Image (cartoon, rainbow, N blue to C red):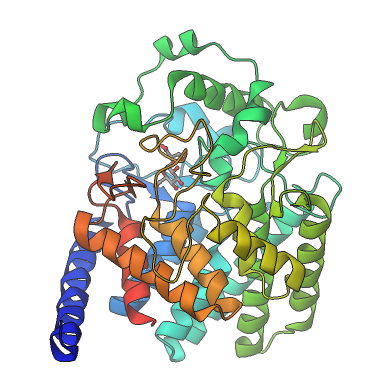
Length: 444
Ligand code: 9WN
């Protein structure tokens, strides 16, 4: 290929991907928010909306702010941002578990709109900052000013009520990590009493729209249901969880996002005339707590801590690489994470021959088709790409970006991808895939 044909091929791919991504996001727009997927996820999801806003900022900035505004309008009085905001007008079939199951109305401080009672990784402050950076102006400063107190309340909820004592936030359900059936949760979930026969009483909506071999199992769902029932029984209060709730885990992704959010809030504070100092201090403290509590010097990676058993979980998953996004991560951890990412387990390289998996591809229980147990997802790739850029690993960042774009160019805006062949899996028109491709296209 000559230089000019190479440049033209790049420009063609860029235009093609942009058209596809925009069409996907437009088709998934639903009056005041974007659904992750029309068939599988017909409501608003928390971290999806943050990723979606980052992409929309490049093409529809007003809609990006609307997306975040709608989500935060459903914030609870205690500051939690629910992982699902139900759309009462949804024309799609019933999602399981739906609003009746969550029964948020009976909990203190829940909003008028029906929501779930759990959260997802707090990637919203960095998203708000990026939306402003991608499309700055008076309107974006006004939007930041409105969102800032809500973002601060979200942080306060997680660092306050969810701190089991070590300076990090705990999750009470694998859904809160966003990586629902990751092998990271196998050990802590093993202690959750559940019988897959309970699923006979419910109708799963996901397996009506996606291949069951690519989704969590019925036993996984029985545990998910049991954990919601346990948390719901206490009306989603967080006091005394250690004594009464069977799943309490400190997740490296959730806590990396928590730390990165403080640095984003510092930048937002500087723009709107608030004090950035306390945010930077909190960012540094969260980074330190992550290293103290979740760093495993033996394997050179971060691992979730099962708070109830007080031990690190054994599985090596992509979650362990996520703290790379922290700007003040010590050099020793940065180089160890790069070594882990570049090892045959994850295959990161300046020229990648296969997409980044979500689980150690050398593990005996690596499953190339099953959801978060192996397949490649664009958001975890994008988050790692942010970390590589933060620590100025230019060649590796370029290799990962190329791999993400190539994946979507070949297979489309799928929800996830086969980690060997790159074939599209799950929903074929998934919003955060489209949104993050738009962002990757815009940044070399
Ligand atoms: C449960 C919406 C969400 C994502 C999660 C992903 C999946 C839900 C489900 O879909 O989870 O929250 O029904 O499987 O795991 O990360 O936010 O896209």
